[in-house]
Image (tube, rainbow over the protein chains, first blue to last red):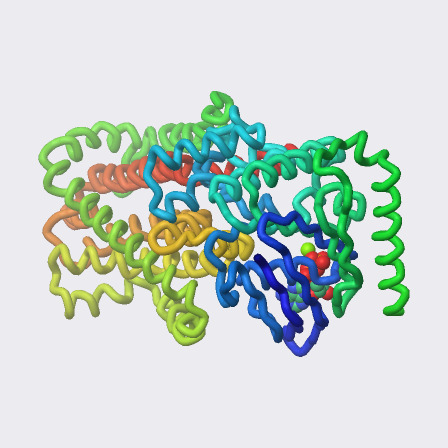
Length: 257
Length: 255
Ligand SMILES: Nc1ncnc2c1ncn2[C@@H]1O[C@H](COP(=O)(O)OP(=O)(O)O)[C@@H](O)[C@H]1O
Ligand SMILES: [Mg+2]
């Protein structure tokens, strides 16, 4: 269980105050897949970094698995928006995936098994020995995802992971994430600015207003669990939900101005 | 590759040829023909002097350089990672770096005598600064996404120091180490010219005082050759250590 309660965050850098998050509260149940959608610059990354314990909130609190967050919580993994920069360029793909496991003091055989499994799962079985910078953006993103999978987190945070990849890769990665979520049963918080993506992927969509951010609406996505790029996206219910999210975000925008 | 090697050796070959022909008929005592210098080269350096002078020089250089690397990288990590410490020591470091190391020779002679220790210390005192200051810069520039990654995935202690700090800073560290190497060679020779009983610098001065001019020139030639060899060795090590870095740059150039 993940709880965000009355969270606000104001950046105060060199005399310029930016109220990035006004007042945000929501819950994510164990094993739930929740998408957070909001316009660029509305504080999605800020929210995620607060939940990950990488950034202290100005006020409010975050509880992950019953414990108040005041540093990176146990069993929580992050896939960063700048995935390319989050990989170690001097380590081969398999060593990148392996490093957190080594840091956790895990045995060699177990580590090798987890790394192989994770790279298989993201379709990089033959890229073990490559360096990250030898791969395309989409493949680098898969490495970052494989690293998160191998880490076996109970909570997984993803920050606009597919913003910079082409449409086909994006569709593949979306389905990959859904299958990973179904298989591992992790609690997944997925941040995106793409309305279609948020409706297609999750069980719930939390919509944020623009900065200073509040929760504009919290909408359950009652689409069938088995999703398919073609069938789901042409489902009338999908179109309806998408319309709702779109309208809500437009409304939140207008209220501000 | 072959083309690059050919291009690289063209200039030295041309210069040597010019030297050879320009000095061929020289009767000037202080500028003997290159042919004479080359003739004396093997007998001068490949005899007992190899063990008595060349190797001790190189050993002192190796020890001093290695010590400067260890101390420079370790201190650089500490200073680079700690903002308060950096604010306190940075002006001092800039001052110390501005002091020309040969000036320290007399002082170090007073403190450490005229033995090997003094010579090694002279080399350390010159090599340390470029390594230290570059390491500080490198550690300061560590990517914050990578820092966050280490925090999130609980990469700590030894693994963190190595993979986040040392490897991140390695392009700058290598740049500092390259500057330090040429400084080290210069200081190796200078430290032997003041008070010494062995070493290449010492031997060259002896030849000069004994008016054995071709031998003196051959010492100059030997130092040049050593410089080239060490630079090549450095390139080899760099290619291993910074393979990833050059790889990224090559990929970026293609795009
Ligand atoms: N380190 C920071 N210092 C000052 N302002 C920041 C910082 N990081 C983000 N901001 C500001 O906070 C707001 C929200 O940023 P961010 O969380 O990155 O939004 P998003 O991820 O939704 O695009 C933006 O206006 C941004 O300029
Ligand atoms: Mg963002």
